[in-house]
Image 1 (cartoon, rainbow, N blue to C red):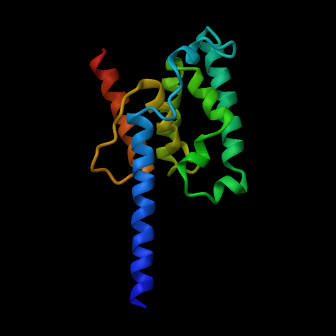
Image 2 (spheres, one colour):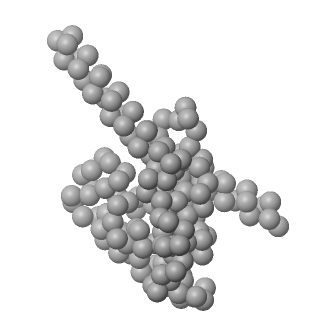
Length: 160
């Protein structure tokens, strides 16, 4: 019995370490970062604010369809929710969509994250190059999303 518990604890610790290192590395070392030149020199990125919002909403809807697939819903890996074409296409749109990403995260927080909007923090991190993960953090996606919301609000106040 004792060896089964020790094995379970070891596996759990390993999983938590892999999850933490993977997410931390993603922001710090840019494993999933798009090259800067690929972000805005894309024919699919509109120029005006209305077109940008429309394109963002279309991609967001496609991403929601993707993450609502049963094979994704049963996954506990963040990467399964964010490594898809609609999500990557949102990131390619760059800085103009930051307000929309934050708005979606705010709405998600108010609705108890029913649509998994907390995963959008990865896009905010990628686009802004702002890392709000601390070395001693246990990775809780919802808490990190909330940090990015707070960071955005503080930046808006500082730039008034």
